[in-house]
Amino acid sequence: MRLPGLALSAALAFALPQAAIAQDMPTTPAGKEALDILKQIVAVPSVIGRGNVPKVAEIIKARLVAGGFAPEDVTFTPVEGTDTGYLTARYRGRDPKLKPVVINPHMDVVEANPADWARDPFTPVVENGYLYGRGSADDKGDLSMVVAALIDLKRQGWVPSRDVILGASGDEETLMRSTAKLAEALRNAELVLNADGGGGELANDFTPIVYSVQAGEKTYADLKLSITDEGGHSSRPGKFNAIGAMARALAKIDAYKFPPQLSPLTKAYWQGAAPSAPADVAPAMRAFAANPADQAAIDTLSSHPEYVGLVRTTCVPTMVQGGHAANALPQSVTANVNCRIFPGTTRAEARAIIQRLVDDDRVSVELTDDGSLEAPESPLRDDVMAAVAKAVHERVPGLVIVPSMSAGASDSMYFRALGIPAYGVAATFMRPDDDFSLGLDERLPLATIDPGVKQWETLLRTLLK
Image (cartoon, rainbow, N blue to C red; front, side, top):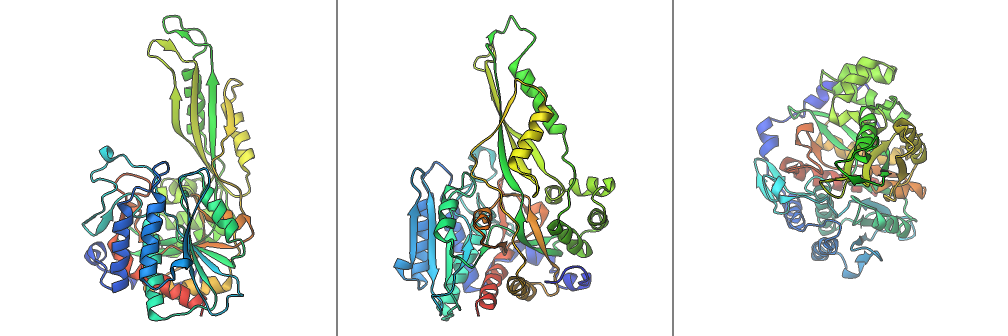
């Protein structure tokens, strides 16, 4: 792994003309197959509650079997009590006694309301250098590139040193029941390569900035805030109103900023990313790495959506429900506060902080069953980092590679909790202005597909030679 000290000119040397990056369609057979797979699975609304994850798995299995995988090596396992499950596909290696390497993308996506989108979210649209559609970036893009890479390697006759198992979960975006089952089924794995973490960062002028390897992540937690009251007629208001009390509680949470924090992992990220970061944030990265109490650096980094989650724990209101009639005093109000907790603070400790912040005995604060758990960081293995470096530098010569902590949650937590090291090594390179994951008009740059497939192939060939 190479951290600070790589010449910025090396990264800039790779910068392509904007038109080329924005408009390139895949030209290699594997890249074209990845795009075709992506179109096919974006068209399947694999949203929790719709029962469509098995349909995505069927598409992936058909592709893999057509590409040379034995049908019995590709299976879908339903998870009891849910409408989802997980897919595994075994790419057999030379020594079956060795522990396998797992590649972990996910097949599910978050809900999308077609009325809110400029294009139907479940109709893949290729336009202006992008493929638009729900899940195109999170995580069906990398899923498609992984599948295309495995098929291409199989057709080339490549045999890895040990088994490679594609393990695709089916509810990463919700309660992760399939992830828990998948991790348990593959608990003998040597390591996990997560296709839904890390990746390449581009400046908004398309200049490559850094490639990050996700070796840890913040802990996810949903807090349920509740208030109940006797209610009554709206013409007879009293001193207490449940909606008003909830509004005051949420206003406190909205205004509160957790103390900035710096861990060895995030310090390495700030130091490694600074040499090639945009001029408006690079000094702040250096300053924050040197002194996490530097308020100017905190303010600068927190003003950027791509960096704010790495600065501190965040807890934000995301949903509110209350009242039962327009002319009645509310009898109950509930709200959801979503927290992304910096390592070192437990879910229970974050809940206690929010409870003290609300400072109202009538507002209960409870941790919900959201499928999350606390997990340790993964050690930076030399073999993994060397293989990542080779694959990334084939694509972007000299690009800085840094370890990182993800501000969002991923399947890796379940593997890490079992003591299996997991690394986010997504092959998507994207600008902040193009990242609409989970949001309106989600899209994947077409130009990332060809090199993305090649990146996965080189990574696997190098790591499992």
